[in-house]
Image (cartoon, rainbow, N blue to C red; front, side, top):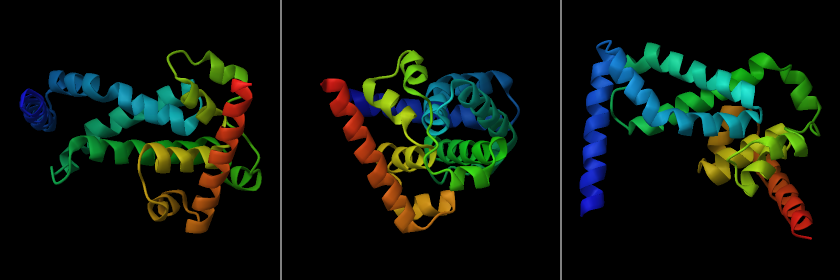
Length: 185
């Protein structure tokens, strides 16, 4: 009972914040930022596998939030809408900051190397391993296993065939299993 009441209060207070942000209230915007920045940054880091790029993408998410908050109509939860904005910006960030054709052709290109992943403080073992995955496999894995998207949705977001999404997911799972077993040995 208490948890449901607390959740209802939080949703109500978030709704109030959103309405204030829509009317230009910068303090409400700062409060909304504080509520969501860690989650947005975590998703950006998982997708981009680079702290600096994740920080830049997170900043871009909140700039876009300020400009696009009026388009949020409340038909879904705000966190769902913000997640979609974050995913789209992270994907756009990748396309803008890397040669897209090179990424597609260079399938073996990996994310962070093992040492860089180990340097990311506050990440658990699985997150560190996920950051080491090749870029497309990492993105598919994050969207499917962590964020809960279906392969059809992932294929649309990333501009790939559904079969490619499934193949990338399988490859990511195999690599994670192999790396995890090596760490346990």
